[in-house]
Amino acid sequence: MSNRTTLAIVGVLAGFFLGHFYLDVFHTVLVDKFLDWLARDIFGTERLKMIAVIDPYIIPFLIISAVAVVAFKVGRNERSQASQLQILYNANDPRCVEAVPNSDASRYYIEIFNRSYDQSITSLSVSWERTPLTYFLDSEIRRANMLYSGEIAPRSKQHVYLFGLPNTIISTPIHNDVLGHSSHFTVRAKGHNATEVTAIFEYSPLRFPKLLRVS
Image 1: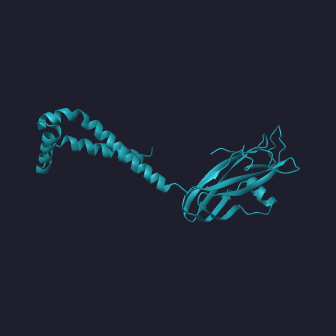
Image 2: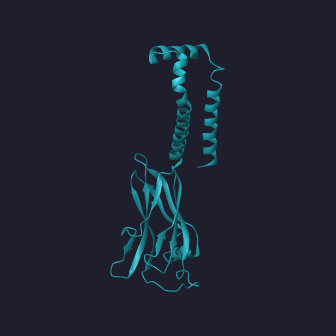
């Protein structure tokens, strides 16, 4: 929970406690009449007896109400700020790790998902950070670090190609070979009407599949 959220909850609780403490001091005629009506017509008793009955429940009720209101507002703000985009990858999904026909090699893909039910995402761009690995992979197919650009419809997925490599597994890292040792890179996706999302991947020639998502 962020500091802003914590301060908001503390502030609301302090306000409720102070309001309850000074309730008798700042009673207005309207409040007095309302309490008299509540005691007489709803509880069928005297005002002081009614207050004695409900008083033990006031503070717990105020606390629960304050926390519920703040949690609702924080959740609504977080939902409104969350991106409609989502980066998907599953190393066990053949759509993400595709076997190359008649070859001991695989192609690696990610999927970009538009979570919105009613809004297309325009000017969608998917890229990865420049690392020795991604630079080498891009140069092999003469591609810039822009993996995809276009538009994606509501509740749709866009298949995005990353790279293709042999399935050969090595037992010892080769540190002077960009494909011979483990490394990490970040993929970013954003649109004109969607905030940026990121995913961190680990490449390793010591296993298969060679690509795993780590964050």
